[in-house]
Amino acid sequence: MPDLKRLLLATTNPGKVSEYTELLAGLRVIVTTLKEAGIRDIVEETGVTIEENAILKARTYSDLSGLLTIADDSGLEVDALGGEPGVRSARYAGASTAEARNQILLDKLNGIPPAQRTARFRCVIAVTGPGLAVETSEATCEGAIAKSPLGTNGFGYDPIFHIPKTGLRMAQLSSREKNLISHRGKAMAGARPLVEALL
Ligand code: IMP
Image (spheres, rainbow, N blue to C red):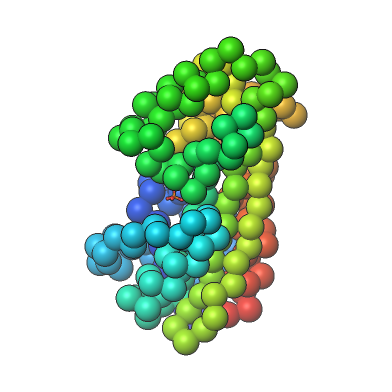
């Protein structure tokens, strides 16, 4: 059996870890999380775009670990709010829980009709390794902000994200169904050959 390379999955978000466990299946790598690699450093997300933050995280964590690394930065863009929460999705309006952030969004959109509640998830995956340039793969998933939360799967904004072609909230999909249509699933389809080229 040839030596398998270690791939650092540079996220501390348990929802992302669980989705990547499926998305990385079949790659000839041993996936290591930040926790497993003993890395406790938190990268300040100082970028003004999701892409900048993904690149920053991949570069920093690869340099810290010496490993082939993938990092994910993602967020929700609501058209009626000028693209908010966008790059600030994880810390929107200072709220400390996903439920609180969802409620803030629902309150801000109160009275806005369905046709104007369009939104999208955006994900950038950045791939790099020691001494290598960073390469990225970006994708979106189009939908709309529902009027109330529903569903218990997924994480973050999933309970309020309505997907017109399924008639369901993201949080009502299994992780397999979500990965087939999500921003992260589609970005990983583009990132997979980038990782394979480094093995
Ligand atoms: P970051 O990429 O760690 O900066 O944070 C991304 C934030 O965007 C998460 O904490 C969630 O609030 C939100 N987000 C990103 N992807 C998803 C998703 O697939 N479902 C729901 N919320 C998401």
